[in-house]
Length: 162
Image (cartoon, rainbow, N blue to C red; front, top):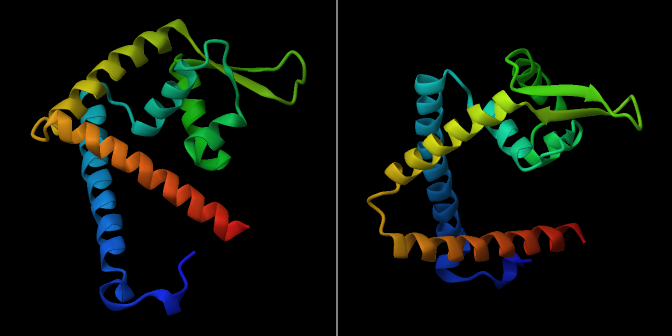
């Protein structure tokens, strides 16, 4: 961790770190807003519902309902109405586990899988369109840099908890 006594000169006010954070936030906000608009206009669907389907698409045998909030980094209370709506729309099922009836298993239906695949294809095209002006080689480099940044942040948070 950084000790305030060791910071000198330009770094004293952490401008660079603040600028990085603000740029990441701005990019996330701009891209997220456009994706939300596209989902709403083209599919009458929300990003949180798409995110649930994306998690279930990776799990062909379903997922324990309690695992979804962890994966999506949301509270169970925020997730419940989303899951309820997806069940109502016939895109997922929710059923008790045969091993423990208190545990709910959520699975994507065949209709849900078809809908998700259509939306995922469009999602990919929308992202490609939004990032088209940024050269692929620079995107590849940016991915590597962001991986390094993510790992550095993980290490810093682990150290601060120790």
